[in-house]
Length: 118
Image (cartoon, rainbow, N blue to C red; front, top):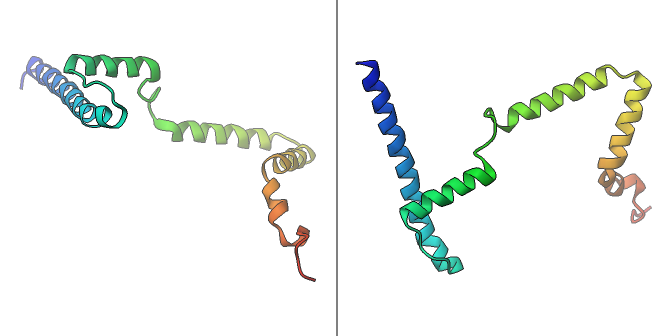
């Protein structure tokens, strides 16, 4: 198959997918929004405008790779930071984190509860 034909097929496929996405969005909007919120129905051009506005305001997920990649980068930075701390600094950091984020543990432990029978 010729390279120009392949590119043309991909362009046609891309336009078809954009049109399909627009039609599905328009159908769902016109089916739900007027009945639920009393909003007006949209034409296909208005739907594409709404999708473009949503893209401008919210984007479509950033740089790619999803949030899991960012999560692992954060964890790796934290592990490296903890590795470079002295043992005393590491324990002080852990105790501060525990004080800040694990307060529920003190309230729910049976040893520190005032309602124990005994």
